[in-house]
Length: 300
Image (cartoon, rainbow, N blue to C red; front, side):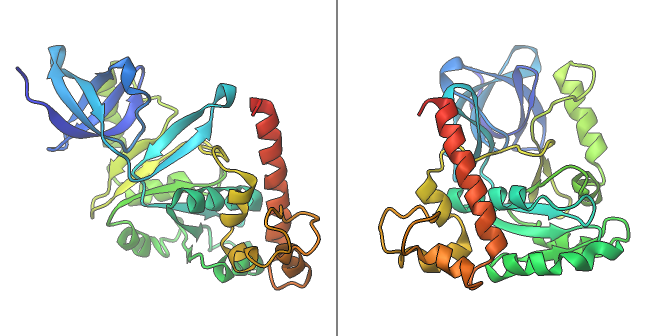
């Protein structure tokens, strides 16, 4: 009887999972249906089987997870056991601040640390973002300034990522791939290794992929923009997920205040008096509206 082993899911390959064992070897594994969905970053118990493949027997408890909405009001887990998420921004393309707020709110709600990275600081327009970034710094988010073109700040990022599991997120065109390549000089070798195990010719997965960084730590590289959304967040929880709202949340006149047009709303009054970022508050209202639309769509 083959020995049961532990491993880490590094990506989805077709209908299987690429699992990295304790020695860093990749095994293509299949799962039992009753297990549910396994996500990149999951720790699993698996056993070898025929053809140098494996079978996942158990998904071990997760310390954190990010989910995205799926059909019929369900959710799908896209990454597990994350320690931190970095929202990557740049002067070009123009920042999608609403997307940034959504990502930060989701991370706050799921108990995952988050920070912002401003890339392309070699461009002259980067200083024009200082006022907007000040709002995030005031809310308690760290901001790191880098340039993958000049190499500025890359060594700092390597030091920050050397422990735990991190993920880069943000809109297309901000340089996530360039930063990933700077952090992972052997990334193409790993992609080739995954391709060989998949039997699919080449690694074409559209899901996230986990890499071990050369100096320690792990990085989940996830293609696409909105790899996770506002699933499993209620309107009250959305307000709680805005760090800068928290000092005002207990001061509203009504306990069920939605912080929209409610009388005696401390959050709205703080935004109107500029003690709170008016721009962040306006974007909160837009995300709140999205939550309502999502609830109607799912029938909940």
